[in-house]
Image (tube, rainbow, N blue to C red; front, top):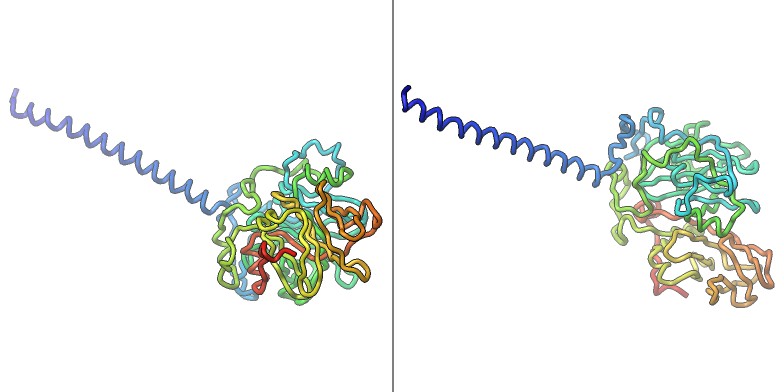
Length: 383
């Protein structure tokens, strides 16, 4: 045998092994890199593509409404409105958990509860509560929610998500196709343009917090609703940016507050004020304030979302409220105790009720987008 050839072959074998090892290492690095990039993409833009059950949202330009994008709503299960639901007592609702976030209505002495994990599967609910038509809207991306009476001139309208506009969903009525803002309740395009729905007070808190106030509440059925899937990982104020939503903002983002900061938005006579929940936490249960010459009371349970707003005007008087030593809201003059529904339940004024003031809880970026002239309440403004 030729020893020279043996030496050449012997040198080639280690080289092939080294090349093979290098190739395997390179493939492994590429796989890890791709995996990391995919994970980062999912974390940074969760639900950006809304790829649920292999169905992807398609955004289509909508020339009639600048910057708006239509969505393929018929294909997406999480954009089909909730039209009918059964209601159960708290004792029957074994599917509910104490820390479940809920939206609650208190109408004519009865309380109704819609779980966050149910409405997230629909974003719009067309309800009838004790013969009262109710529209409920929700967007997990901006933590926005509202309730309205969907009746104009005696006619009821049914709604559904239509697309994305000004940083959140926009909705349309089935009867005329008019387009509406979901948390202001105003028609911005179509035959009903300029019309505005009457707002109802919609509370946001946990199931346990609401039950402590209204143990007789009825809660929407959860039998065919999923806690998982779409929007499972969203929580109020979560720092998640969905690019396709942000692209629809009508103006530059208002940088006065962090984009995802939760605020209580109050509207009176065309004036708007944002109360950061973090600021309300610093003050405590009671805030006496004045907006557009209207005296208002804000009740806020610290470190929660439970909040409500009422007029402090009672007949010809303006009441001033305080937090009593037992965490009760009490007016200074009559020493009556008041609940989150604006009703006096003890004292001289027991049975009396304060007038509701329009409020909503949203993340700052959508409140500011819909109310560019909004003021911001500061802890030093407290009376």
